[in-house]
Image 1 (cartoon, rainbow, N blue to C red):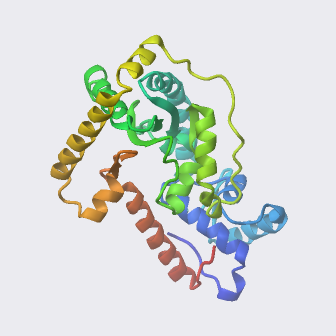
Image 2: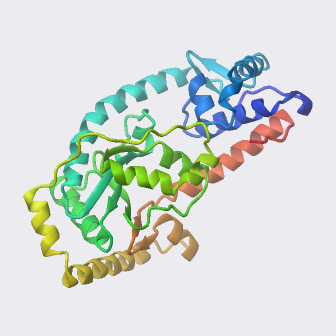
Image 3: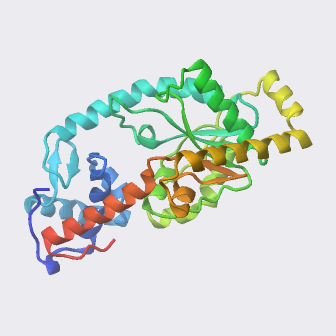
Length: 314
């Protein structure tokens, strides 16, 4: 990684928290500004002057490297350009994100649409796509998911770039069970595009995430909402009774059966984490991205600790 060494007694608690924040985002080659380091670390915000002093010390020790306004544990001049290009890509993609979010919200039983993934962080590479986090009416999640997947396959020719619908929950199950730094970061960086009241409830139900990122501030979202169309209302009425509930269950069972066959390389625990499927949740992460990130983060911390001859505490 090209970082220097430091004695255990020289590494302060603030310094340790700075290194941990950078170590996480270095996994994505995403250098942070000063304000972002504070935002994504556990450094108390009232210690800003101490924080600045600690960053300068780590720079002098060649543990942290500066690339324009950005900081990283990686010494790579291309990081600044990559971050700026990523911001330009994100800006262009947001136009599509607004368009498709409005479209998604008009599907039956959709109650809120949020943007997740790299776009929600404002930095997307050229091959990046738009990830959606969708909240539905209870007992109708699988109808909604099936209709959206069918639309993508038929009308978008299965193109994922603008229409990656990979995580669904319903309004009665807003508490996310995976409580870790990855999920906390994804939750607290969601961009609500519709259903602001439900998004606010989602954040309130998952206030555990602030234990990982105490400096992230979330303002309650308000504003104009996407209006439900007549077609949406008619379809919801038609599928709102007993037969709609039976259809939802059938679609869930068929999808789970197909996934168990398709992803037989996963053991039961891995399948449940990467492809969690219940009446109230559908998670489609076949690359097991969450666990990959957590494993890489743990490994990154171990490498940093060995190179610095310290134990990081955050």
